[in-house]
Image (cartoon, rainbow, N blue to C red; front, top):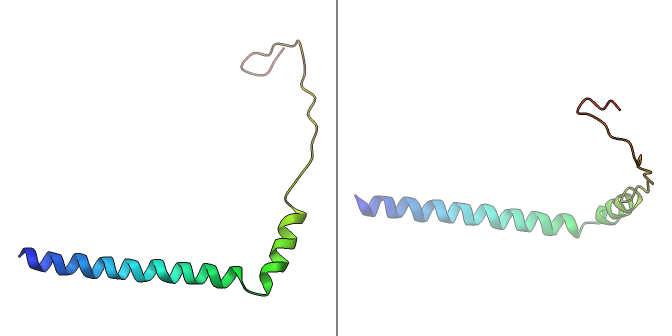
Length: 67
């Protein structure tokens, strides 16, 4: 009975290994595609948003945001 489980575990580990390998290959293929440069350019356009916050000083609010 133990031998049957050993084969199942080996088959499952092999299947998971193949899936992991397929994911790595797909990630590599996407990163090296011609469209990758376009996506990098678009990402750099939306990477930053500069905002200045001026907090209210000296006011104490309760839990309902009333002074």
